[in-house]
Length: 110
Image 1 (cartoon, rainbow, N blue to C red):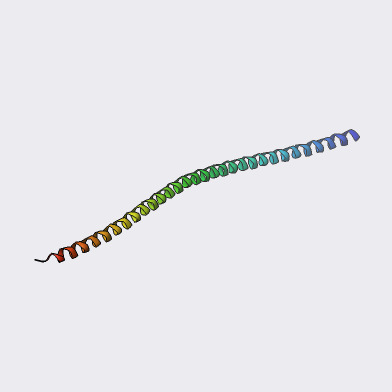
Image 2: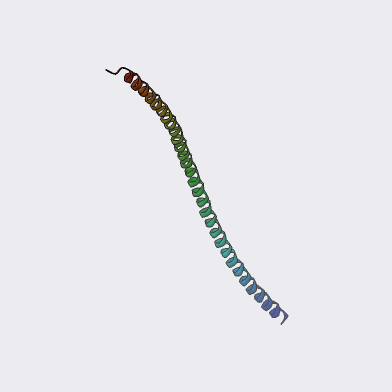
């Protein structure tokens, strides 16, 4: 009778061991799936970070181009302003010469 009891206990322990092994295997599969999901999400985030870095670099290049254009426009505006000032000074000098010529011509009335 004791042997039967020992065999019965061994069968129960074996059944419990099989259930425990099955549960451990299920947990292992779930853990593997979780790690695969985590790895996939990390890869997606890495791609997004790479895309953001690339877009930032392109935006930086475009910003530099805009800045260079603005600097070119500012330089052209300064040159145009200097040219306008010179034209105004030349116009004033020409006006004075024309007045002088008019006064000189007035003194030679016929």
